[in-house]
Length: 150
Image (cartoon, rainbow, N blue to C red):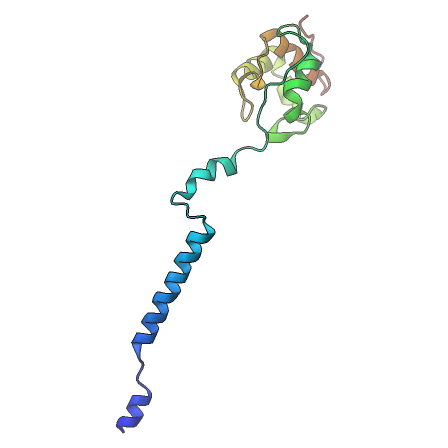
């Protein structure tokens, strides 16, 4: 009867040794695959940053003298030409309609302060008059009939 009992006994030592080895392998893989980073959150901001970052562009006209079209091409088109970051796409009358209803001055106020993903002044060095010309240019292609300042 004691021989039968020994056949069914379970030896815990190999199970513990196997578990320790498995945990060591997992920790080693985590360190190797994680490049040994102790603070993996350090790169999170870089990985989740918006795809389109506003960039000041150089335009041939001096600041203050740029046309609406020049400013749009230099600073606005990267988002408003593609609809990136939720920007209303130039020519999309449905997207621009509620904005056009604010009037040129209302849109100018939003552009100066920044709105949603758009930084103040669209990330440019534009003057108020240049911004107004750029807004009028985009809005007029999207159903508005704003008079752009000279």
